[in-house]
Image: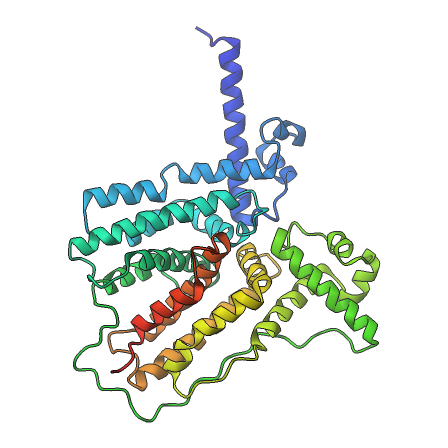
Length: 424
């Protein structure tokens, strides 16, 4: 018997919605949420723009449908199941291997992590609630592992839960820029194994720290010289206002969703005046990134340490200063570093180079600390550099979602005190 008209219409509606969601999934993964328009998705789904709007009124609604599709077999349900099947076993690496088999998962969630950190993003509440739930489940799993003697009894379950979730996010992002250096599941497995050891564990056969330290590798600079031509003070000041305005808007709405007209209106100049000072939108993006680097690198309280270990242990102080004095610089970095995941984004090469430089610098510091006898022999400097980079970025993302529950500096200090136990 043929289906009744109402049932047939319902089936066609579901088929159309599924086609739209599938097209949106492919577009968001390959081009990024910010750079994709509803017209792009309608064309890919083979329907008209008005036809798409009958099913999804906004791009945000469509993003929520794509996220829901990914989350049907979500992390917290899997963590619950795995914990029940094998109590005391941490399943982060297993779950990461599962995620790697889901087409588009890593690219989309790596991008959403930072993009949705601004409260105006349609996925902000979804991601904020997701993090809170994952931290809660993770803390329960670590507590159970402690009870089962598979994790050291002196581990702080709540703190480790925050740090693992943060590093996991950071690893997913790093894998988009440095795929040749990042194996997410392998890194998580290494960290799971490290939790079996007491905090700050050092082999009894390790030599004591040396009294004379090797030279501390200098901090690299990522800031480019200001490309603005020298000229009248009024022109320089106006360009600075334009860069500040663009920084604020990029942090709020991302690069893709911010137009030059938006920036001109924010600053109070015409679009032609804005272009006179910055040349193009891509030039302005480069100016924003360089300005951010200059602001971070010009921190007045930074004093180079005499030992590599002390240089690393001093990093949380910088995180405290940044959170207190320059939250906007953290916000724009979080949004842009994740928005630029697609290889054709104008800032992709900048972040790939920056991440490579940061990991290399931290690796050099950890190698020097190991030569000094400050980094225990069972620690791999390359792994520690990668994990620290991922952890710091991930903590900043989590802080943007929940500033009252996540203290970047405290979590960084706890991790570094474990990795670099102080003698005596």
